[in-house]
Length: 313
Image (cartoon, rainbow, N blue to C red; front, side):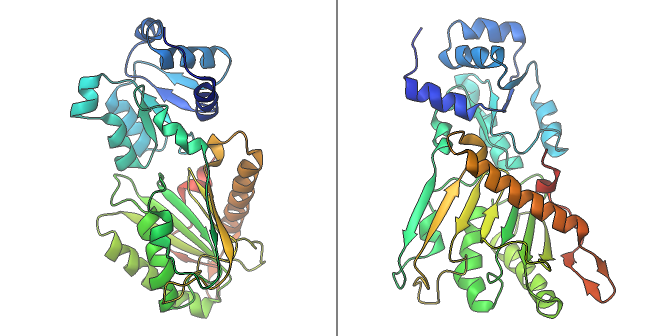
């Protein structure tokens, strides 16, 4: 049996940490496959060591329903599905789950390829140099089905929408999903200014993603809890020190700063990244739960206060 290089084994163990691995084969078939398939062998060892959770004899229909009804935790790094080479060529279930539900999936053939998410991405930006968000983010994988965006100035005016918010959303949002994509904004805008911006952001998303079902809400950070400008989804954490309103109408950076992008739950070598994600999530959830919309006191705008990220366990 062919063995894996140590660096790939290390990637595998990081990548499978706390994962749900789903098989549409029986446990007996899995044991048989693990005698011949290197990845299956390491999955079996990982399970025996108390690592990833395994689900067997799982039909595509069951997985579809669990994805739709959110019984699959969106924060599990990966769903690994067994499929034959013929299935991979003709239907490729992994691609379907990514593009239908925003949930990262792989099979035994491309599992190690997706371990690149154990790496991080970053950019150093110099003031007055020419660049833009579309160029920075074009080669970075953004999986997910929900966002939390924390930035006090990203919604400041129409130029900021065009130069920053629009290309960021074009880079992050999928064309469509078979589930609702949740987006929550956190800002220190006052009631009078934020109310006018809600419709503009909704219109922008409908223009750039006409086939995407989405739910959007806006929360006012009345206690100034947040300082850093951050965007998180159920897979990635992105930070920009100078704020996401970084580029002017001439595509020049307004400040010297850095942009960092991590996949916290897949990077055991950076435990602080998980803490950063969880702390921001907890503050965002607490603020959403406490926000009221009662007569003249409005601390949020939107149909409701829901976001799939708030259901994180």
